[in-house]
Length: 361
Image (tube, rainbow, N blue to C red; front, side, top):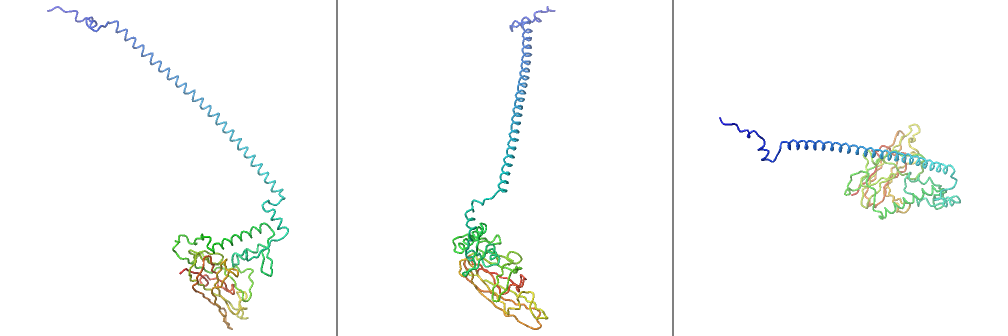
């Protein structure tokens, strides 16, 4: 056998060839472990420090917000208290003025002094807005004085003067509309109607207010209340005003009207009853009028008339008379068409018996 070479198990050749020593390797390993341990400790200490710093800053911020919140709350409470005090002072001052108000308003003080000395009177016809009973009743709020030239409307209070001025303004507006100066015109009562639809209207009889109506032979009574937007009644491209149909534009119109009169007789005395003064007048008349604030003679003009002579009989229990009017007229903007009768208490209240209307052709 060959002899064993101990140099093969020795570390020296390898260490020499790599310039290393056994003791050196152990030393380096110990240094590296020590450095890693120190780095981990430093990182942990830095993280804890950052957390403490952030916590302190957050606590400081919360404290500042709490102070601001308390300050805002205090200011709001103080402002609310001041507002209550101001409102209370204003209310007390206003209440004192109302309870101790002895002088007249400054706006109408001079006019009130003038009206205290004397009344202001003007002709009622210069402020009348129309021929209906409702429009006539507007004049009753003033002091009416009969004069040789007509009835005067007199005022002795500032509020009466204000109402008189309102009626004057309304009358002026209607005059300007009739002249064509104002182009705007109220739309029809039926929505959705286009401008190419011609004006038309159909009114039906409604109950009339006969309170205070006195009957005189030859007098004409305006029918001032019609159904205009219910049942079969309508207004298209036209307006309804106090029992009148207001014409929106110039043109030819067919105007029609039917009025039915009803009278009931007492069989014992053979006298009519159920209507005031029905037996005193032997004829019944039915009129078609137009009104325009620009026209003379109070603005009214008769367009057509029909008269009926009542029939008499010993055994007659009731009488029914029907009058019809219909014709073509050239009507102008702001003309107002309405109906008059000689005895309004005899007019049948049935809306299918008494009606009137028009349409443009």
